[in-house]
Amino acid sequence: MSAPGEALEAPAAGGRAWLALLARELRLALRHPADTLAAVLFFVLVAALFPFGVGPAPETLARLAPGALLAAALLAALLPLDRLFGADAEDGSLDQLLLSGMGPSAVAAAKAAAHWLTTGLPLLLATPIAAAMLNLPVEAWPAAMAALGLAAGFLSLLGTAGAALTLGARRGGVLLPLLVLPLAIPAVIFGAAGIEAAAAGLPARPYLLLLAALLAAALPLAPLAAGAALRTE
Image 1 (cartoon, rainbow, N blue to C red):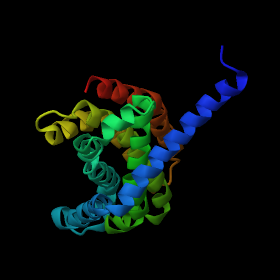
Image 2 (image 1 turned 180 degrees about the vertical axis):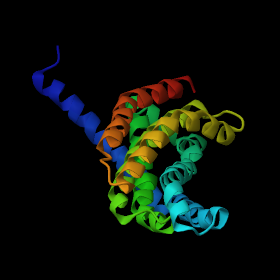
Image 3 (image 1 turned 30 degrees about the horizontal axis):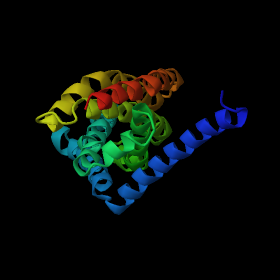
Image 4 (image 1 turned 90 degrees about the vertical axis):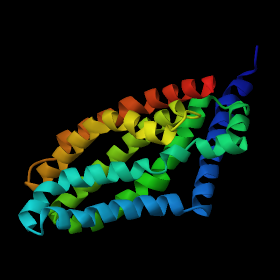
């Protein structure tokens, strides 16, 4: 039997290894910021194109703003997902991570957290710029940022599972959006409804709670699915 101290040290060591992997992912993102910059620029440019497509009428833009913000943000967050495991698989780092003693689900969870921190968080910070371009009322900006933050976290988890499932597949970059986007539709619906409610002076809390429930459901399930896919690679 293991000593009580050893039983307590094992989870602590696993937590340190997980944080070390997360720190590694963040360092790599800082060294190669092109993915983050591309996602943010895509988000802002899509928001800037809407006035040209639907006309500059403030009422029309404000009515379209909730759905446009959510759709643009989720599409932008998809851009770096095909490289989430691909780069590590190409140079052998993924095999080393899976052989390091850390569970595949823990590796996937660290990847999802890093994706949100390096892509979801910058998109969240760029939300006021896009909201202003779409003439969203200022009083709805906090609800928009909350909705985008929760929706981006949900997409990071779904995208991690999708990236693991399509790893090594031919045309995986094409399959990944087709796999992830239909599952992200509820986040778009609830997020847009919350922003629209806030813009109309109504409480956005019920819709944000539904988004949080989606995130809470995906939090344990998506890393498990991604870990199972990584084991079969």
